[in-house]
Image 1 (cartoon, rainbow, N blue to C red):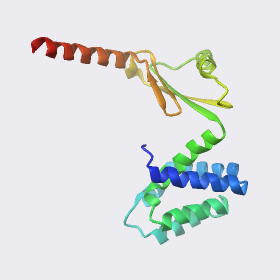
Image 2 (cartoon, rainbow, N blue to C red):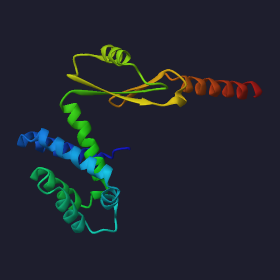
Image 3 (cartoon, one colour):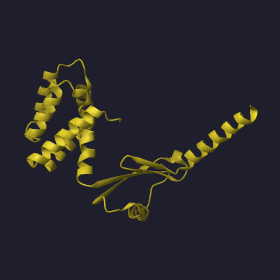
Image 4 (cartoon, rainbow, N blue to C red):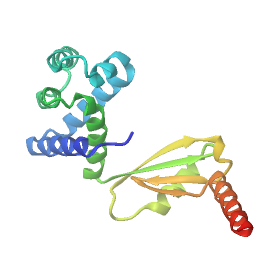
Length: 185
């Protein structure tokens, strides 16, 4: 999901406020709870994105679902965003908050996509090769995609290195196609 600039700004504001109030870990847990609830409840996701349902009804729904389960700061933030007409980007805000939380806590997210599952040893080697003093913790997420044929795609936070066989074959095909066009000219 492409996160909008507005969602990033709202998420940053929530992060800064949570840090200021000494509630960062609690708000992070709240955000995860809300995200999990949205993922498990299709109707809640539809409610958030709806432009037809009045914002006041959305706030009532959020309150009935999350009151007493999340911090007052989190409830007030969700109500503020919703009343401000931004409920359509609330899921993006929550996703951006998680990203910013991990940056704040110096957690490096490594996503490895490969054609086959990686062994525990291979995962350790990848983390060891990428370690540096900038990050305190490394979180490796693995995605298996047999269409890659071989090799890996490595995403480090938001940077990507594609060393998959399928991409190399596609590049080779494009190069051949381009050379044939040039030769025909």
